[in-house]
Image (cartoon, rainbow, N blue to C red):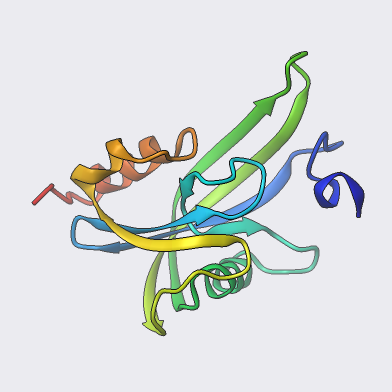
Amino acid sequence: MSNDEGRRYPRHPILGVGALILDGDSILLVRRGNQPLLGYWSLPGGAVETGERLKDAIAREVLEETGLTVEVGEMAEVFERLMPDAEGRAEYHYVLLDYLCRITAGAPQPGDDSSAVAWFHRAELRKLLITPGTLEVIERVFERYGIKQS
């Protein structure tokens, strides 16, 4: 499909999923290997395919981007990413459902849409070039589950 597989200037918001993979006060992030937001750190995830269940989409996206197999837990956050162009039109518009996930197999390695995969302590997150809104989502989840900085 043209226009970044129909993601640029979509007729309707695109449904996406993200994985919050925590280890104490650390979280696993991927560096985006494609536009939009090439080079930014973000949660592993991506668009849900037609006919795909949400938890299956998360598991697929995490495997593709990190090489990890995960068990998908509860939904932790709903997030909207709206990215206007210079004229104010919605160039990208995503509604993202972020789920807590637990690694069951594999070792982190960059995959098809990511150029790097790394663990970051909570204290390091503010120093990263991170996708807009993602830090706030992560912080809310850390607070909700009582995870303190070490």
